[in-house]
Amino acid sequence: MNAPQPDSDGPSALSSGLKPRHVTMISIAGVIGAGLFVGSAAAIKLAGPSVLISYALAGTLVVLVMRMLGEMATANPDSGSFSVYADRALGRWAGFSIGWLYWWFWVLVIPVEATAGAKILSGWIDWPQWVFALIITALLTVTNLFSVANYGEFEFWFALVKVVAIVGFIGLGVLAILGILPGSDASGLHGFTDYGFFADGWSGVLAAMLTTMFTFMGTEIVTIAAAESNNPVEGIRKAVNSVIWRISLFYLGSIFVVIALTKWNSASLQENGSYQEALNNMGLSKLATVLAFVILTAVASCLNSALYTASRMAYSLGQRGDAPKAFASTNKRGVPQVAILASVAVGFLAVFGNYLLPEKIFTYLLSTSGAIALFVYIVIAVTQLRARAAMDKAGARPAVRMWAFPVLTYLTIAFIVFTLGAMALREDQQLNLFLTLGLAAVVIGIGVAKHGFRGGSEDEIIRAVESADTAEVADDVATSGPPRV
Image (cartoon, rainbow, N blue to C red; front, top):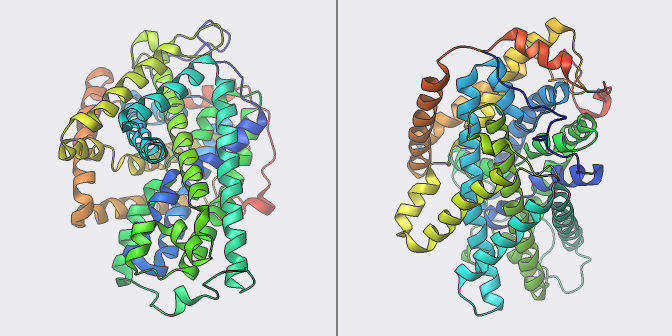
């Protein structure tokens, strides 16, 4: 059974309002999440300086998954991204299931980020936190409702603030490490050499990897957003080819500076946060307000993307008949207003639930999305195995090609399965895994009941690739990674 396809020229078509600079910054913003600033201290506590290995492992997984997704997205850009590709390659039940799970993940991001932003603002202005949570969510909802260009413009400036802040932090950190930053109380690499490299051996590395892995969720948003630009293939190609240096600079580079200039096992690192602790040791404690503003920007960026991504996935599900038909409608500006409002409504309920429900109940609610990132990654990998065979049969040469296919694809799948197994064995991760598995079982059951447990269609993949309006762009393998196989 073939999935209904969007009519790119019809009244329900999305606009093409995103400019190249928007797509570029959206790809960067997807890597720099609020978790980098807020959650890195917990990861460092688990692994010590060896947390760099944890970030490198998680980052490598993301690079490989993005490479696979980029191959499919440049062959046939679509706002439904991997959900649409799973529809064709694995079956309608698969696209239905992963689409709704992904939507649920981003809907739950709304209350988390709104609450985080409200905590920062309530420290500046003595208002109830729920008021700020409401204001932040409402403001970004209005901008998303107006036009996709508004989303892109806000995300452009949010991303720019984060990039400038991290590059500035790394620059100051390098000066401090070299001992040439005036007023700095720390220099050299004592954080690596004086307190041990491992906090808990390789077990700590694994624990930290499980913590850091989910901070990368959002990297894939560019493949959704690019569908609303005039040149989606080029936007996706650039984003995929640059993901290695972005992860290396923003994550590995900044965490290297933090560890070098702090005592990783100190209580103050957990109390102040990793970046503030490093600034304190550099003699720059007065930048606390600046850092808080940067974190607030990261929170707003994540919330902005959550609203956008959830609505576009809901729109795509509506286009394929897997969500209410109204979700697939757009206004005269090409904005899926119903999909946005429905996603925001659920998000608002979760925001209020964060303040009204007992903390334990809300924790359970959040845990239902705890392993969705890994589910998304494994669906992308399995889908790419099937889609690549069909693309090769059709003679398609997308602008991005997976390296060392199929070896790296199989290794990626094996690594994800290993990670899921590690979550099952670690007591601190079991709630996330088992509640997510429970939710996934329910959603898959609904998908199978609706569409049957039929596999995908190779012919449908070929037709989609052949009908896609994409200009072939040469893949710069000399600078973007290993040669094609």
